[in-house]
Length: 423
Ligand code: ATP
Ligand code: MG
Image 1 (cartoon, rainbow, N blue to C red):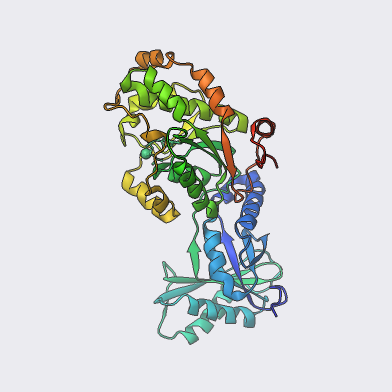
Image 2 (image 1 turned 180 degrees about the vertical axis):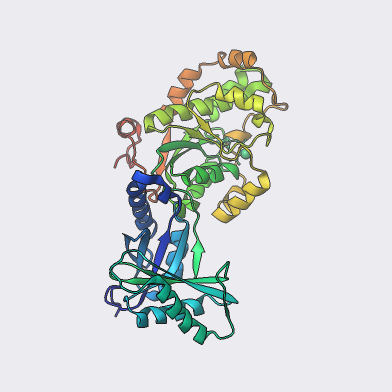
């Protein structure tokens, strides 16, 4: 029979540390509450219990002690988490925290040097932290006679945090992904291909607190819908971080065909990209998003020269965030591997990028020619048509995502029968 963690005297918990939230002054509680909500959501279905605020940390209760690692691993992937300690929660008496400290130091092996760091989050416990340090240290030295106490940069620090009602003792832990809780920085619309770059870019902006709405342009009806499934798989792979609430899919092939028949060949790619940005900007206004995000990196491919970046920016007024603009491909690939999107992006599927590509794309577009080409087709009509044809998939891992009212009404009108259109 399992008992609740409150009934067990000494039991394991995860203690969540956050850095940047601490810097936010009056907003602190907004950030903490959002992180609590995001953690509760991310830990659904795992053997975790309550998530609550204690003494400048968040506390994640566990269904049983053996769950500590699996819960810590899920916790550390949530933006805003700087570190997760696999702690013991015990009574505030020396016998209990000495015993927990022994277990904590055993769990932290192998090591050569250690120290004890006691602190109190309130003053209703009589013992002084220096005395706690000394007493716990004596117990640990007796158990580990071969190890050295070292005050500066020890291999392991055993922390004893005495708070109201309980003590928390920890040594081992995992580094969190850092950043800020998703949902504290407003919404962005992220142009999500099935390549390596844009998933990493989306995650990076999500990690700065933005709620991400994806938009994927597929080559349908001129290509299969394979890239759309890869884009969905990418959203699912990012789900432990809880950054993407919804993915919109735009069948873009017919417009590309029309553009390819109309504008000078060398400017095709720039026109496709201007149209993608214009559709994304329109979606951002429906969603109430404040910026677009792309995975562009300066000089990576022909369309990403500074001239061409300027030529595409010119089609919209909304800010465009390019978090990878100065990042090398190697580093992007490494991030994709860590995030779990690499294997999905490594699969090839024709999307709108592979359709109607010119033999020699322009690398240094001149603005007058770009604007002239832009007027050669009904771009405003295309934006409206593409928005009318848009489809979407929701992902239940981003509690801060709220679908816009306008989009709900809009989808009730447009969604095919049987679609799940509303919340
Ligand atoms: P990625 O850059 O994501 O690895 P890619 O290399 O195939 O994909 P690029 O030609 O580098 O695409 O495009 C630059 C950026 O434009 C992408 O990072 C992405 O933000 C956006 N983009 C390109 N193709 C698409 C698409 N089919 N749907 C949505 N956005 C796209
Ligand atoms: Mg790219």
